[in-house]
Image (tube, rainbow, N blue to C red; front, side):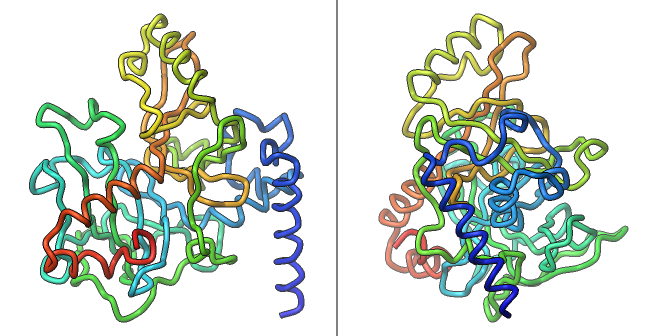
Length: 336
């Protein structure tokens, strides 16, 4: 107990020291803007970065060909509220394209396949245990949109994770109805997902850490970390022009400052839906798109958690009372 308390104090001190220095560089310059193996960070000499990664990495898991993040466990059941990218789930998986939520009290849309979280022990390897995953809410999706042409404001959804687990095997097995009796157990050594404020606004020029699971498991078998700074709105607008000049598809998608922010760096397939955090470990958003043209600026588009939260609040307020009563128990701690 004394040892655990001592380590908690050390972690808190490291993160606060980083904050006092402007929260802009909790890692050394050799790590900046580079995609790093999670194990290299945990065994490296950047104590600030290691401390932040320890705080957040249990929140980031796999979903299909991409990643997802447990945003919060602050709801009536203590289950995991997660966020991922719609193109990771596949928009054809929704019943309709207009904004909707799934009534999990009567509908079982759960899946085990491809859904993973780090072990509750905090072991480095994500392992072969599948966790039950229930897609829950999406905003409006354009009729013409495909999984590759989704606009950033359309490219997110919210889901629920409970405690149902199985070992990965040869046959598809589906979970039972979402289980609300037992709070989600996960690797969250400092209760990041239960803090008074689990999220924050992105602040230009300050530090951000992106955590996700690249499909390149040969080079990144246990996930990857990117450390960089958040671009200002002006820099993001200028990046769009440069991307267009370089022929990168991101140059054709307007920057919307209320929806997204940009981080400098190279994103690779599989990191979509991964979590973006500040130096205090608060969630800033999820990665959804990145440039990939030689000679183009290396940028990553991040949907703001504040935008996602506002969409949820607006949707909730638009519902009839009977629908509100079905949605709010799963989201109460974050939208009310």
